[in-house]
Image 1: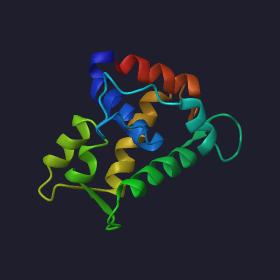
Image 2: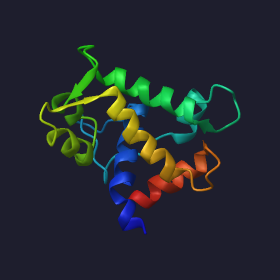
Image 3: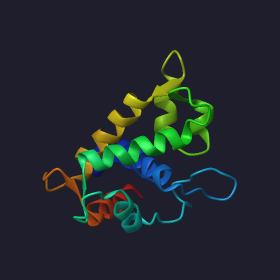
Image 4: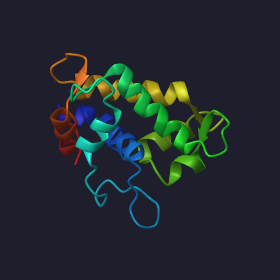
Length: 140
């Protein structure tokens, strides 16, 4: 079961690391050596309604913020170069297989929402700190 979700697990861990701005020395995120993200703090920061969970709108806002943080040139898409130091190989491979070598905000958000569905194990449309922690732990 986990093997089937492995690419999504790693992609979400990388997206979350981007959202949290966690980089290892040298500027690259490495799945095996990256520090544990402060998931509780990240959820609290983006939990607009204060219920301790992230709904789809709050999650989308967090992912969008991460995208625009990485879009240093403010052109509306990310290139492989902009992703190289922050995301894992799955996202990079997805971008490399595109003719233009770019990922748009919509593509970035769509990838994140596939992960949202996988993380939301009780299917209530909300992500808890515990669900995110379990998801990331299983990705290792």
